[in-house]
Image 1: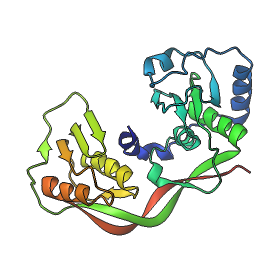
Image 2: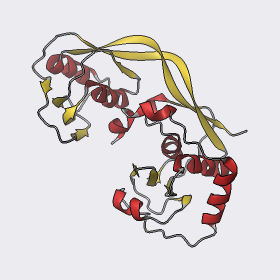
Image 3: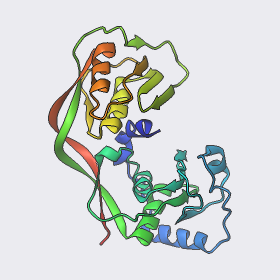
Image 4: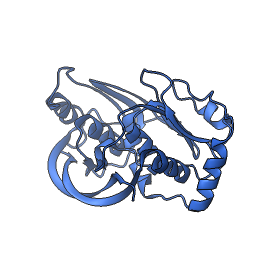
Length: 252
């Protein structure tokens, strides 16, 4: 889900070092092979990705309906996704809200895969450059944000989680339900809904079980904001901060 990807944006600064010459040779070699295309399915299945033969490809989407995307260790793939999604997978930057596009992106949808033994991020970046003529970099940019703060301490809706075996999440147009989630994870979900960077300023470090519902007819997101305050005691306020953004631009 989008919000789970956004909360992982801290990995955006990680760079996988792979010699440019080696990348080109490897990708070109794989292009010449009759690679298996069983991966071009919906939805994303990490088991298929793990078993996939080594290849790096970006192809016109085989299906016309919305697909999915994901990672398994260093490998990554997606079906019927837009070019911006492929950019974020290649640069390991998961937040659409924190992505700035300065050059026109292709309008089509694509299937993509990078399943080399290692160095898949760098190889996928090279393939993007070859096919789309695009590259990207991370920059610190001062911009308008929303600050998530504690307004009412010890609100009844903040239930410390008793779950210790990972997370369980669900979200939709008017609900957010999860177990063993951090407030920073909640902030990532809210950020994607509102389309504005949301920074967690609560200093709440525990994991919580959350079950939020708000009005489906909420174009201005007032009902969501009120639900955060009423159930969790958390308030969103305007601010201006320097944050890391992914800047997509034309390759030189």
